[in-house]
Amino acid sequence: MLRPPVRDLAGKNVFVTGAASGIGRAVALQAAREGAVLHLTDIQAEQLAQVADEARAAGGRVVVAEAADITDHDAVRLLAKRVTEASGAMDVVLNVAGIAIWGTVRGLEHEHWRSLVEVNLMGPIHVIEEFLPPMIDAGRGGQLVNVSSAAGIIAMPWHAAYSATKFGLRGISEVLRYDLRRHKIGVTLVAPGGVDTGLVQTIRIAGVDSTDRRFQKARRQFQRHAVSPEKAAEAIWKGALRNRYWVYTSADIRLVHLLQRYFPPGYALAMRGFNWGAHRVLPVVDQARRSDLQ
Image (cartoon, one colour):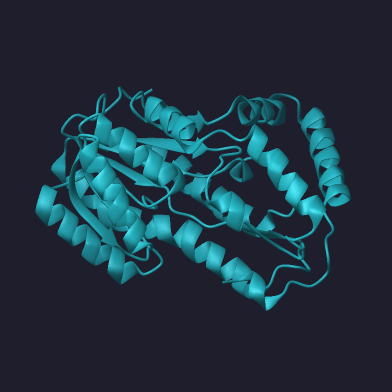
């Protein structure tokens, strides 16, 4: 394994997408407490400004806290230019921003697939395109952290569109893990399981009535088993500063990944049971409604 390029965060340039809430906010605030120099972005300007204030209060220095849509390559390019001009190359880049839309093949609409690809896959690609070359040119190494998902590992029910993007980010990470090694830039791939973020309240499952009591019950059960964003952030930073490639935020995902790799028949049986149980619990309808995509 490559010697950890970034061993601590004191005085280090850190860039975080999706920093206004959830895991992005938690990793930013933890980095602030460790004395990082922060560069933050999110599509939600007001919430991002609040997080920047919290980060400063926690002891971090915030150089940039600018709203940007990571699906817009030009916007990311201009943001990267401003960040690099202000602080030089980043030491750590964290691709955290993402959205979640689930649904059956008949329930998902084309716009669902496209929006997931634009945010969850092209967004991180834009960040990698614009922030990694200055890191390479600087010659001091660094760490790229890509937040994928358990859905980037296993066959979760109704996750075809979402998994397409998370498996895609996993593929990018797998290649860059070796491509960037000669530049002393490590790559960390995060596979969160259940994390109790704002996405839990706004999750869209095309073809599922979110007001149905069975859906509400399933969501409450998920929240009881989910870890907090702060716990997830602790796992992410622990892994990134040790240059670990795989980082799990909960033991269940680590175990199912081991099952998949070392006992495929058991994994296949578990996934069939998981799928059957999900369809039994939640009322799936055939057609998605336009209001599902906001």
